[in-house]
Amino acid sequence: MYDIIKKHKLLSLHLMVLILGFTGILGKLISLNSLPLVWYRMTIAFLILLMVMIFKKTILKINKKNFIPLLGAGMIVGLHWLFFFESIKVANISIAVICLSTSSLFSAFLEPIFFKRKLLKYEVLFGMIVLASLSYMLYEKPTSDMNFTLGYTYGIISAFLATLFTLINGKFINKIDATEITTIEMLGGVIIISIILLINQDISIVNNIPSINDLFYLILLSSICTAAVFVWMIEIMRYITPYAVIMAVNLEPIYSIILALFLFNKTESMNFSFYIGSSIILFIVFLDGYIKNRK
Figure 1 (cartoon, one colour):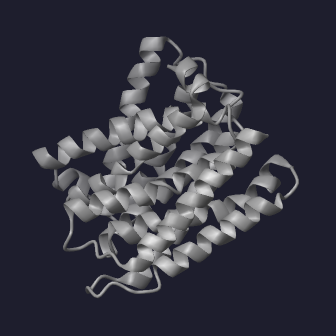
Figure 2 (cartoon, rainbow, N blue to C red; figure 1 turned 90 degrees about the horizontal axis):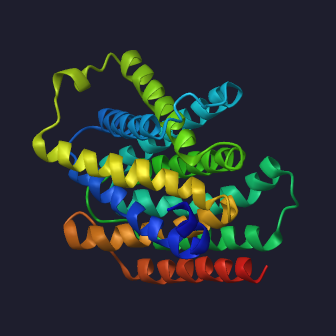
């Protein structure tokens, strides 16, 4: 599989983003609140990856020196998903996923700090254009009773955290196997969400067992959209920069919103500004890919 990813890295990247587009849809379909939803998602993903590592006999090959930083990165992942799904719950899928587009702006400024390289002017420009497009798309507020401001705030925080853990992963991709990285990070996420549940005295994961439908969607979310995609994303980052990954992930909102429009038409209000803004974001993503390929 890894050889295929290396040979077709850009195709693999965009296929991964398409699969990620279903994350918001599944989060909407699952009736659980954000905290238990993220806890179940990361716990199931961790158990799946742990079984894979046992099967591959790599469970004892984890470098202890890197364990704590990766555990911390996993906690950031857990918080990212918590804010992301909370944005969906208080607002809608469209607002939550579109806010992820601001990741490119955060990355343009943070990546040079993480990897000690020069700040590239065109990356900053692209990030600013994406942010301007996002603002334009969200200019006309939906007419429903959703909490637009809170949804937007949670979405932006989620985007910042997504950028942070992507850059942290960039420091480990050439040292540790992608499956090992993801397994430790899922464990870190389970730990931080468990701590939050304990602080809030929230025992919903004990009292409210997921329904058959919720369990089915959770397994899809945890296995395909989490365990598989995270390993996939980390492996892709061996061949392209974290910034390029983040720019491609800007397509996730487009896929998610189109899917949401078909599935949840009543709660996913669209307007003309969406089509203009999303077209600009698409153009910037493909322009960035073109520039990266020329280099």
